[in-house]
Length: 114
Image 1 (cartoon, rainbow, N blue to C red):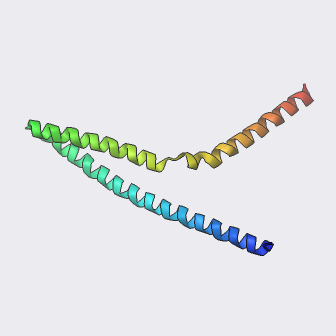
Image 2: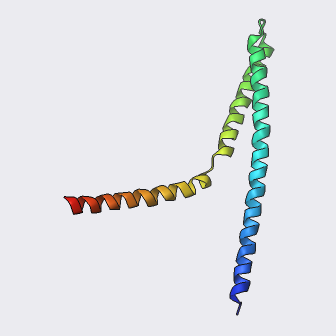
Image 3: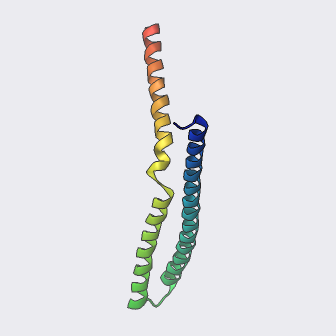
């Protein structure tokens, strides 16, 4: 039979490992977002330069379309990296808990007053 101290120490170590993994993933995601934002700014500048070019031949138009498509994909990638369903887990349950509590208190007050 395991001692309670050993069990809580193992739980603490597991939580610590999960926290370290989450921190590492967050750092990687942050680095990727920074790179993507720099790339986005660079492509936006290139698109601006190509649009300002007076003599747009088919090659320039094709390059402009390619850059616009890549920029669109990059923007979607940035949005998906910054938003995750896991980040909504806690706020969602807090809204459910406090919203439900508010409704129950409202019903109680209405029945008490009315």
